[in-house]
Picture 1: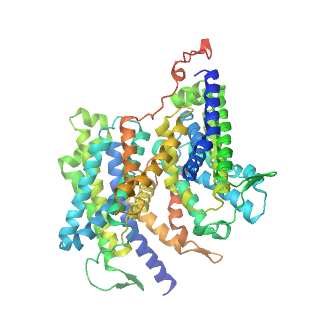
Picture 2: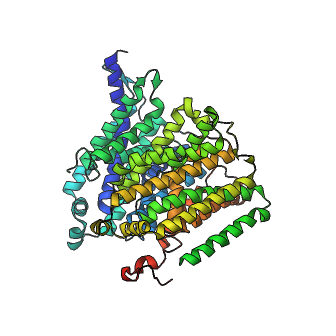
Picture 3: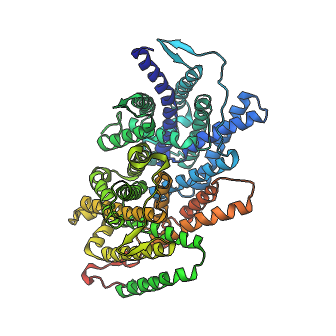
Length: 293
Length: 329
């Protein structure tokens, strides 16, 4: 493999994982703008989606039905989380709310450990075609599905925000919560919507990425964290920024992990790279690369 | 609480602590008490940062780990006597906090949470990756016991006394610090940073001071920890530990002297209790899924007691400057 095709390969794998980060960042940004809360439990919904789908398939569900049910379950858990923990504490301080979402994430991870133990699981690729050659690099067909999911999700969001009543209400609440309330938009209901939506997007990401990465009870933790980095990279108030941030983080990781310095490989530091990116962005441009100062 | 009352509390606690090992015959409970003491030291530092200076850190395990690794590496690779290691070790985390403190503490709320969390994960990844120095995921063995002159702290009972004596000193220091002009300035920052700055309090320097002190205390605790277990690996210094430290402070009660100690006791106690209880009730399930209950309990505490179990002394709110420190308690 030539050096150029190697770069193409990194770019492809960067975009694949980056799409997942972007989707999670999207869920986070929408939730944050509506509720003012960063849902630190978002990663657990990735796990719930992926592992429920695995279990339902094992129980004999047809693939598509299993995926749909798994996504619905994650949405339901998101809604329950909002009603049981976020809604009652909506007037509490930011720190309290952060700790609540951390508490929920710990509880959900424990539940996942109880149900699915520590085994790694996998889902089959969505199609059975062999890998595709592209400029000397190899594309796994599943990667295209992941990219497709990101595109469809973004498309859906644009339609939703521009053409539906609920979408317009969400946009209004994102711009000015008080003003939205004054014209009769119910922030409590929007908050419920935001957490349900977050659960659904995260679960979809989990199901789409599992054929590539395999799934485990703790898979969501790092993915959720990368979603945060992506959201911060793009500026937390910005939906487009979340997408660009996610893709950028994926590519940065893929290239940085391939670097080596005096024979010392950076592969093991892949997770650390995301943190370094996040800290640098927070310190130099806390509003993200697309945000206004 | 008047200063006389504080002295009584400290003496009372010291007396209880001195007799505790006589009462505790089980080495398990003694071990748990040592862990509570160690975590209390970290939580007290973090309590100064969170409760008094009003800043959050979700990366405290990084400083705890830096102290532990500094002591472990000095003791094993450089053959430095353990007592010196214990003296030197806290300065590395304090120094790191000094360097990163000013830019990081400019951030607020979610951003500060994420930045400190990021530092914590970054540092624990470095512990795993720099295996030539840290021994990587498998860690370092052969750390000697702490010895000061002819005294060797090689039993749980000795370590218990050592840890809780240091905890007592830290408590005493905190009691004095929070009642000093510096402590009052801290509380002013917590109430309103802008108002504090307006009356001439250097908020940035004080926040940095609290951050450095919290890192120093975490470093002491980390060094004490490895001289007790005589083994080090990256796992006790992960993100989970950072979260637990923050929870201890919040559960105990922000802005209180005893809150972090109470919080450490509750969280370590709860953790151990669940580890024992859950397999008894659900014998089929293995693993560490007792964290479900752990998580649920935190959510419940946050929902019903968002300010923690202990409330700050009333005098914090009702100090009358013209009457000096003559408060109601």
